[in-house]
Amino acid sequence: MEVVYRAVFMFAFLWVVTRIVGRSSLGELSTFELLLYVTMGDFVQQAVTQQDFSVLSGVLAVGVFALLTVGLSYVNWRWARMRPIVQGVPVIAMRDGEPDLAAMRRERLSLDDLALSAREQGIGRFADIQLAVLEVNGRISFFTRSGSDSSGAPESSEPG
Image (cartoon, rainbow, N blue to C red; front, side):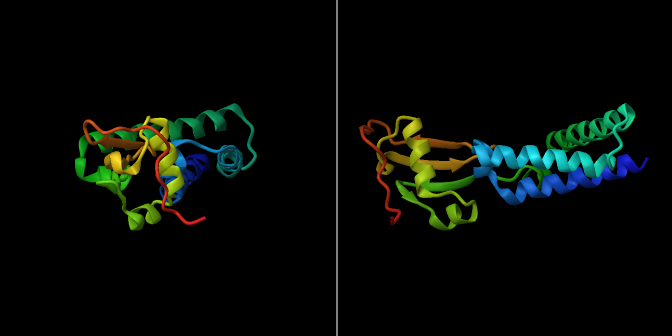
């Protein structure tokens, strides 16, 4: 039964950590971030099972994590008011070609990251962007002005 308690605690801890880390880190992981999460997974396994390598402890720990994940999905589906707490809310990073630097700072999203995402979607200039939204999954959605020429690289007003 101790494995169940440890699994519940570690699940809650990891949920808090991923909420603190932020969406921009979850959209696409760098090599370092991937290694960090893999290492964290090993530490979680050690903390949950206390080096108990029995099959039953492993199955129990994974089962608890799976049930908690399904439970959070159900909470998101059933009670819309819980979605902002569990998943977060989309954040407007740019409106009418002007970046919202305060919102970007809160989400730890740089202008370079915003420009990279814009280029990946074929948007040439920040001025062409009507709205840029950092979604809850870490991806950025762009809404452009109709009829704009989007050739070239997005402008960046970030110093350095």
